Length: 311
Image 1 (cartoon, rainbow, N blue to C red):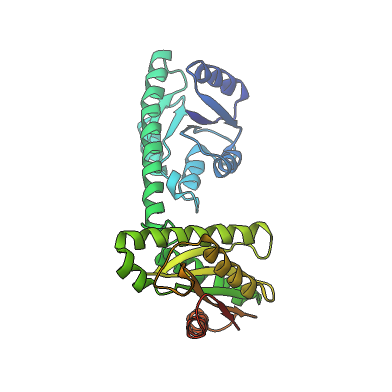
Image 2: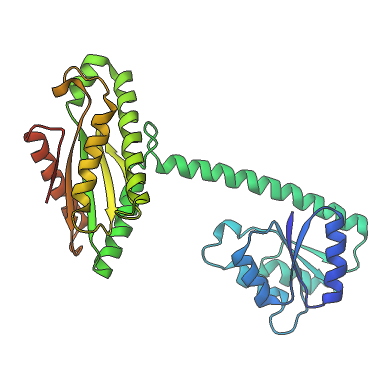
């Protein structure tokens, strides 16, 4: 385990650290409450051993502040064991109310200390497994089950934040609305399983192209999302002049270069159409930006498909 030891006595801290390290644990020492809080915010710990009697901020106050840290809710139940020479009933009650989980004496026997560390190690393992499971669930909630791109819900959340930032700071906002040309005919001709594979191939191409745009620094923070059905979006935060049009054309060219067979489409291959907008400065409602991009997408499809129309 990685343990945060909070104790104002360097001599006691050295002895305790040696004991814990002999059990195979990693120990970080904080000399006082403020230092402990700072370390806790910077690093992840499996356990905190908290001295009660410290000058300035005592262990109870330090624990209360750690438990209330914003942005650290996932660690709000990191076990905290109070270590003191006076294990009175009053101290025990105060420790629990402050957010502590256990209470041991500074002179605790080696066997008892080791047993408690084994119990805490089991808790740390369970916490790690739970965190992994939560991360997987969060990932599934944010990504489209078929293509792996951001889903509509996750895209909307990110777009709302990016749009608000653009409006407040007077930045530009770029957006591509993309549709796979004659996709219904593709499904009817090749079947829905092939249609799913087609969407996955197109999605991967859009994502790779977005990463290329980021890597070549046309814009930063560019990402692709599945809007619904055969429709996709590419978001270009703070896009410079003409970047949205260049990005749209690059997306169209990249998908065409895949040369995925589509006998019911002009040219015999899968193609996409795109509507590209750049709002500078961003103002009003982001829904209006999507509406304008959708209108340009319609123009691209009406004009023969396999093209990008930009404002």
